Length: 210
Image (cartoon, rainbow, N blue to C red; front, side):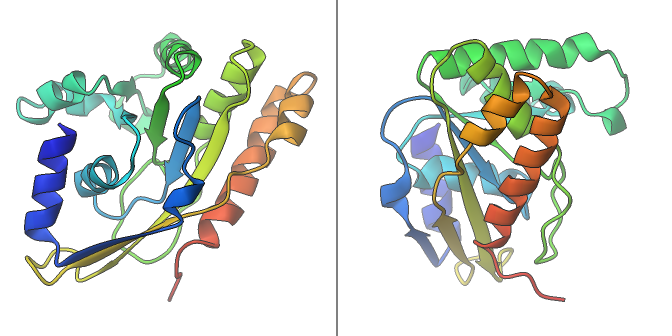
């Protein structure tokens, strides 16, 4: 799947540049949190460009798609059930957090788009707390230090064949110790504050324009 992702990006994009690749830990539990502009393209781009096997978090309805579903299962993607997709059973996302903790315990890397939706405007939408909750759940389950890595995606003519250019900016890992400690007594507040800190980090990696 990674080889296919590399082929697709090499064929479609004129350039794909990565800044800060040295900040990506080569081993150990990792959550890669990126902004989301181009639907499935963003995930393909990161699978191709980053030097880690990434377990993607994807919205549950995609797993029913006859073309996309098999690929998601092949890469071990984790389904997330969003309110707008219908249903409010909290047990379904409890299973997501159990699966993400198991993934991180195995030393793997998770890819998540914390905006929760894809939108083409050069701005960051309000973040959902999923990435923070995954990290705090894993830390509470004694997985060990989990790296939270913000990644900014920027594009020039993203939908234009062979003239499009993609820039992947890898930021410094977010310092999470304060929020892990707070989660022992105030888990909801810890998730909210860590999400806000992640948002600040992502805004520092992209160009937001009106």
